[in-house]
Image 1: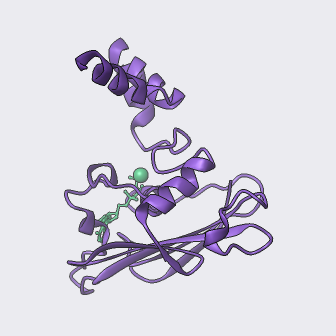
Image 2: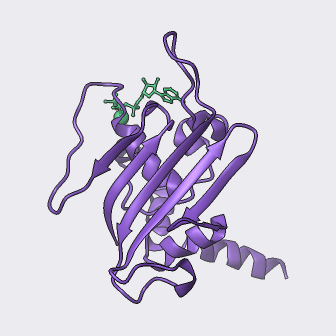
Length: 185
Ligand code: ATP
Ligand code: MG
């Protein structure tokens, strides 16, 4: 799966609609401290279905909505759209995907109304979005999305914590839950 474009509006510091195109090759995002670089990665994780406000550096999910400044009022909603290119044939038919295999996933949150998802303009469930990315071996918890501070965390982790990270990356963390479940039966 290849990311082609990211659109943000009202998401964290991106109060005005912004569009980031990812061209072939290596893309870098540079800028001074606090300009919103980490917010870009969080937007990608959020549109893929992240449900933990803590991993978005907030206390509640509505904290992703632009909170306002002395000069600007807060926003009522945040919206992020991710355009990805997938090989033809990989996308379930129900999403009405164009023949070239482009999929646009949109997540929107409104104050007091929660999140809603769309795939190519059609309303879908959070579960559909989770499956879409899981089938492409990616998603909000993909080890390909490395948050700021995570590298230092890996280096300074205790052996048991490091093992947990490796198990998560290998996709076998769920086996422990199933084993515990089986042992109790
Ligand atoms: P660094 O180089 O220090 O890692 P960065 O470019 O990664 O910085 P971010 O952490 O992405 O910066 O952006 C932080 C900025 O986003 C802060 O100025 C913070 O006030 C702003 N911000 C975060 N959430 C919101 C929100 N809900 N509303 C308005 N601004 C927000
Ligand atoms: Mg940062």
